[in-house]
Length: 142
Image 1 (cartoon, helix red, strand yellow):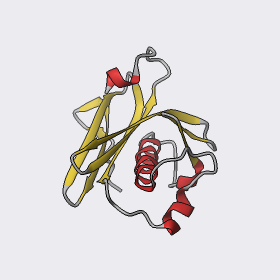
Image 2: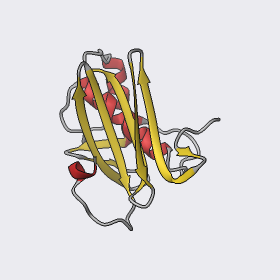
Image 3: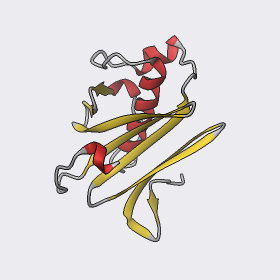
Image 4: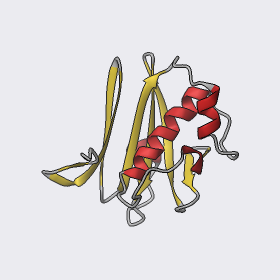
């Protein structure tokens, strides 16, 4: 399986990629600051079916639009899988989305998130900070 979370010539960089029919997106970060990053891009008006929402929702998730929750869960999933510590994929419902924070209860890993609306697209970013980096303002780093 090909991995898309690192660059061979720049191992000090972590990255995540996403695409939809009409757009693509990427996020990169220094491994000195972040263990991993995740990104997802979706059409802002994409309909997320109730059956999908039931599978991905955690009882402690904050109230968001269906597409926002889907996009955030996808970005956090990529962020967690890009750490290299998970042998196999896990359920999105294991991810809890709270105000500007996410947590994966089984592993205890947690990080920050942000969404951006650009044109007709919703972009979700998930960051897993390296505990050795200094605490900086999240919005300033993006």
